[in-house]
Image 1: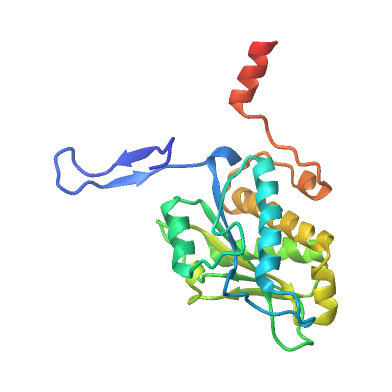
Image 2: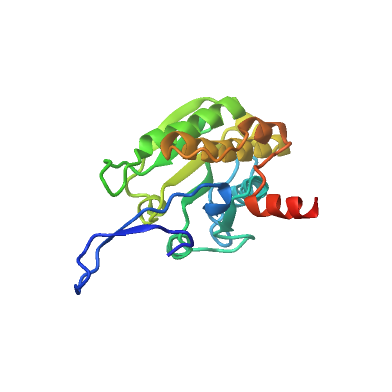
Length: 249
């Protein structure tokens, strides 16, 4: 179990089958582990840009690294499914997420189709809420789509249910896959290749994760979304740091 997990014992004291109900609720970003998944890698290049030289795998990793830094600056713990141009199977990605007991899974991709197609999509696993999982994944995806469209200024292709997508249906935590634009569209690729675009995409994803916890999980992490977009990220001071500062004073 994670540290600080509270639980309620449901089964009798003497039993061969122990039943308990977890009560773990993160209170700060430091309690949360975000698994960042840069799609493709190594021998799997993903989509090829219309310019003939841009590969999706590299763009995914660039955005993922930017997102990791922003989340770390906000206080979140993170783990990456790959940190360089390495081939990583879908099973390895989901195994890492599940075995790390990740709290949220963020997969990063870029899209490809006919040259006229453009825009942003947010993919999610379609679900019905129940006592064990009260999160409506479509609502969760809507938050990401809103932030990405507002920030990147690209056309919206909406939220897309993908029940058979491996990294969405094999992960044991809330998961989102963002398609951050079409590299087969000349005009869109020109924007995507800019550092500013990749930084804005990372900002939008970080802001979406904060919004997800506040609006879906009903947990206010006291993080300032405006500071994410301004580039001057501010995170609440941890109680440990506060105690140290008090001791120094």
